[in-house]
Length: 95
Image (cartoon, rainbow, N blue to C red; front, side, top):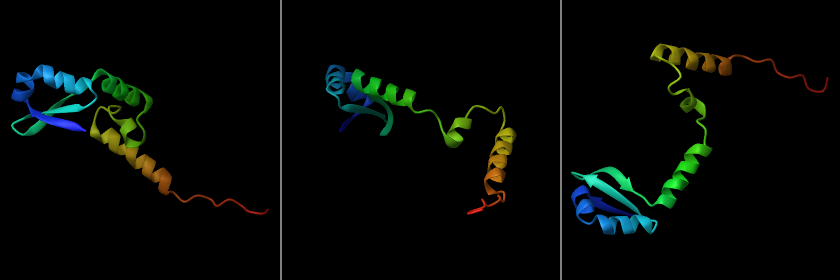
């Protein structure tokens, strides 16, 4: 469950906001009605950090930041697509 507060309200009632986050609830902070931040307890933060560390990037996400420009990235994607769509020899069954 989460509670939504404006930045001004969160600032004015910081002790209460901190208590809410410490109890395990997420305090979503908005500015002009748009979410901009969240206040979470230390236990929740540590849980998120463990999840991030445990999940290596896979798929196209693993390629993020590995190419200096878009052309090299497109070439790598094209190569993967070509390899996966190329005709393959069928295995011989019951030889």
